[in-house]
Structure formats: C-alpha cells, structure tokens
Picture 1: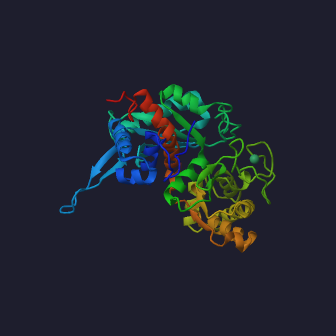
Picture 2: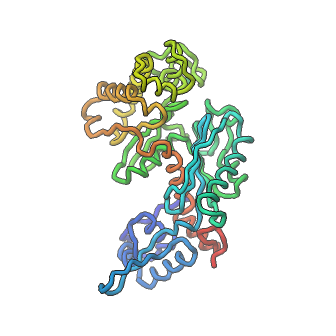
Picture 3: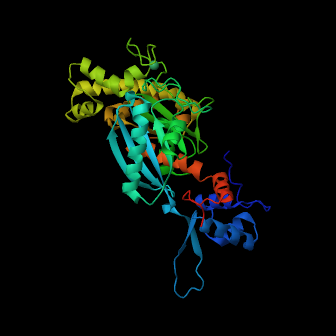
Length: 406
Ligand SMILES: [Zn+2]
C-alpha cells in the first residue's frame, strides 16, 4: 500500500524514483542539486533517476535564464498536463464537479442539479459522463482522465469503503461507491465523506502551518471533518466527526432522519431551519430563501438562526474543548448567516475555557463551495502519485499519462 517518503537527509542508497518524485512534489527539493543534498545520493544516481521521471512524464524541467550569472539551475516541477483527475462533491440535490491538474490546480468547476435519492444506478453513470465531459472541455480530449475523487453526504467505512447507513442517501447503504466508479470509469476512484473532503480542501488552502483543525459543514446534514497533525482523521470505522446525531439541548420532539429524537440535525440542519421559519409563519422553501429573509431584516428568521447557532455551538464546545484545534472553519449554506455564526461563536466562547479558545480561529470556509472538490483532488492525487504508485508505474513501463512510456 502507500508508503511515506523517507525523511530528507537520510543516509543510504535506497531512494527510489518514486520517493524522489515525492520530494519534488512536496516542494522540499526543486533542482538536481537540492535532491543530492536532501537524499545524500551520488550525483550520478540522482541524474539517472530524475531522467527516468522526465522520460516518463512525471516531471518537467523549467529554465529561467539569468543573463551574465553563469550556469542556470534547471528547476524541476510536477508535469501538470500529463493528465487530470475528475472530482465531485455530491449533495442530496446538487453536485459540485471539478477538474484538477496533476499539480493540484483546480482547472474547472461546475454545479449541476442532482437527486441522490434516484440511487446509484442512475447517479453514478451520469457522474462519470459529466466528469469526462467537463475534463474534455477544460483541458482538451487528448489529456487523459487518470482518476476520480468523489465526496458523498454520508459515512464511508474506513475499512471496506462501503456506505454505512447514510440517512440522506436511500438506496446506497452498503455500496462500495469507489469500486462501482472504478468499474464504470476504468480509472482509480477515491470516495470519502463530504465533510472529510472539505476539511482536506480547506487545509490545502490554509497550508501546512495549520496542523489541527475542524471543518464543520452545515447543510442538509451537519458533518465535521477533523485534521490531526496535518492528516485527515477518520476514526476506527470512518465515522469520526459525524455530529448530526449528537443530542442537542432544546431540540424539538421531532424524529430525526436516523429514527431517533433530539438530534442536532432537527434543530440546525438547513431543512430544520427552513421548517422552523415556516412554523413562524414565513413561507420559505429553502435555506437560500431564509438568507433572503435575513437580508430583509426579518426578525423571525434571525431568531430561528440564533437558536440553531446556539445548539450547534453547544455541541461543538465539547469537541473543541476535547480536541483543542487551531482553526474551526464553518462551511455550507448556513455559514453565510450572520446571526447563526455570531451565536455559534458566542456560545463556544461561553462554554469553553479561555485556555482552549485562546489562539482558536473561528471563520467561514475560505475554500467555500469548492472545498470538497479541492479536497477530493488532493486525496486522489495522493493515491495516484504516491511514491509506491510512481515506482509501480515505472516498473511496468507506464508513463504519468497511464500510457506505455516512450
Ligand atoms: Zn439523528
């Protein structure tokens, strides 16, 4: 399976081409001389391995001439146009689709209507077609689609890759969505819970300076992705951060999608907010319409959102106290509602000790609606471009494009 690149500066002779590629990809070395310094390998060995990575299309060379300064070091970069990956963040009623280059850059983004309750036999073939079309439009039909990364609004087993009782996805329980996508598309697919992907995407934008963070997604459900020491934390089964069904004080006596009563979801999900605003006598059909009421300074909408923000803040206070993150990023449609966010923040400061909240940044997501597709791109590239995957491709005589190496 996946192998971490050995630490820079390690002595010994066993740096594989894949490990050298990982060194360049991480930004820890950008020239042949830097690779020699970082690995302690003989210059001749580095030249050979770099040449193999150039020949197979994993790396590309850039020359920046400096007139009059003698020989110019040739910078090595990941070859971004050797292929692309298709990414998607599936919600109950819409999908955000993306195309990501091998250097991690988001090349295209599109939002499409979707009914996830139509089930996998309708949704997955549609998804593969839509991602192929978007990739071809973004980078031309000649650039191969090398993999897929997809976020789903339900828990995915860390051990088996199968959906685990996803309350918002009727007809999907027990399905290995990644295997089904691989079968349909003929390329590797990585499938992950949507809030986990959003946490990875937000973390990619914040950079490695942030090591411990939580990303809370407020939408049809309430999910939370957790980054520990710079890495996604999934828990023993893959259900870490699923906060929708934590008991919330003041929850009305309404049965939740999980079949129990008193969950946070029945107070603070977008559907719950819409329901409560309707109970206050305002005719709204969506969270977006609730935000429009707020813009018109409608006090009933603000009151419902403050109640939802307080319940969410109380649940998150326990988690923030336990986990002590540096960043709590809030995403999803309700993160745009000021009364919700302000009450959530005030409740957290009220319920946590200053020791926990000093130095805690609470903010709306910087990646916004793109967080999921950026995170999906990051995870599928980690899979496709790991040192072990690159070494296996070179041993099989395959290039970065998946084609036989020249
Ligand atoms: Zn529930």
